[in-house]
Length: 78
Image (cartoon, rainbow, N blue to C red; front, side, top):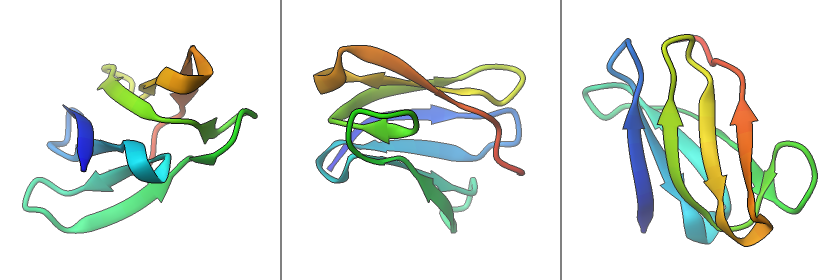
């Protein structure tokens, strides 16, 4: 179940998939593009992502709830 949503400047939608410890990216018409993040505590790993935001440069900021931090992912191509 999604726990957070954000959109980038291209209309892509990012979904915080808390139960699977990852972020999923979809086009504006719903086609799957990519997933990133995995379970853990290291760089690029998540434990219960609960929200996210995308800035103007395309950086994805993830509220990594159970790791008590904000994890930043660099832009993916649109």
